[in-house]
Length: 379
Image (cartoon, rainbow, N blue to C red; front, side, top):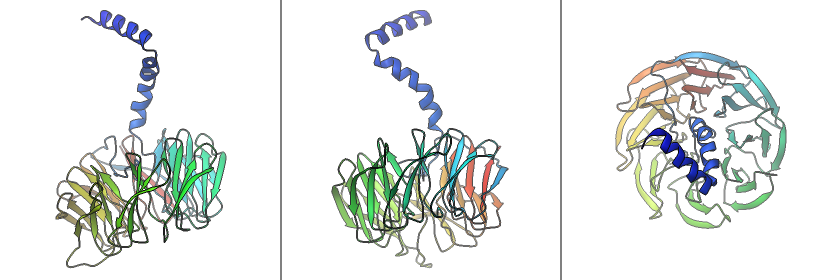
């Protein structure tokens, strides 16, 4: 069939099925949006895997001075970097130039809560316990929701709902339209970790040492089992399995179908907690440890594939792209490692601890430091 005939057939098909016109109109936007990092860990499954590629050779493109510590991990959407600072500012910075677009003042400093961007709105929590919804275009505040404890969890958006954990022990589900409470789920300790979502179920490991599955539609608990330890890290979901580190000095793999722990990895020579949230791709799970090591474990067995030594604790959560690992360390270095064997490919000395996690989009990597600098690397 020649090209003209194909076009005529497609035109007739669209007239018969008008919804296809909407679909084809959205395709370019969907393709453009694919290479973004709109929330903590990049997606609702918290995989830490970038959709696009990153150049093999990086250089520092720009630095933005926020004025105080950046422990919030950046989000990147629509060519803009969104990040929180202890100056009590939510910042919007141009990804290409590093120039400030706008800043929005929150009530107290933004600690580890990382922005989530969805449908033109940025969501972020602050240390006073407020969740803020802010217009992405110009930084205009839309609504706030008050919890009864500080927020270190990062928001996750699912359709018309936004989820946020609080140190008041609750996981909240709110309407994205107006911030009204839809439901809340109460745990027995702080909700520090960011919830992961898959198949209409929210998965959350907690400070009460319980791993839960909570139905997104109505907030009802659908599964619960011992998490294996006090858990500050957020779980990564891959193929009905969850992987996360604990303050019991181990890394856990849980089968979500069987509702039980499959394996636990503990370094026999170094007993330190895991605060970094894992990234997962293929047969590999990568995360940092407070024993100064970056770990790559076999997803099926929990056996170490490689480790890489830094000079301080690694609370930063890794990002994976183009067969490489991108991660910060409290030794003040930003590292690029080979995912295959853990060899160092490049590092950048920031000079201050990097406990925030990198965000990757449009061939660029962005990470904040505890001296208030936001760095962008690329070509």
